[in-house]
Length: 168
Image 1: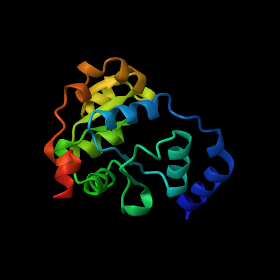
Image 2: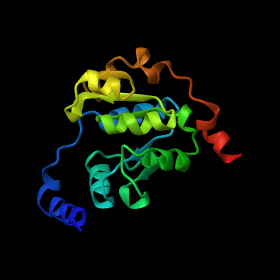
Image 3: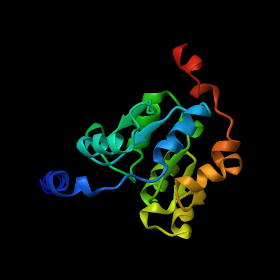
């Protein structure tokens, strides 16, 4: 009941003040160009996720999205990431989670999924690395600027992530 009340108040009073995460659309588009399948896996409710997808202009780049209505537990439980991987038909070990919290890292680590952290969530680098981050960047723009040396630029997109493999 408290969670539902929180969600209703947040959606009515505060969500309009949430600013888009800088470079999120550009980053997601770059992932697609590089051959990655892109999923948004959030512990937020569906209304929040829909709002974020809209303000970030991600409608055309997402292959899947997951919100808390689809899982029994939020992060740090791995179920949000696990369902996202299932939806895009990519094994967790072949995916890369991007997040800004220690809970994102713990959820990814539980699945054996590599985790790249951005420091936009207020966590320091040591905390994010302790949670399993293989790389930490100040923000998404920094990943784009260092793309070739990043885990994304150096990653081989696995066969399980290619559309041809998914269709078989």
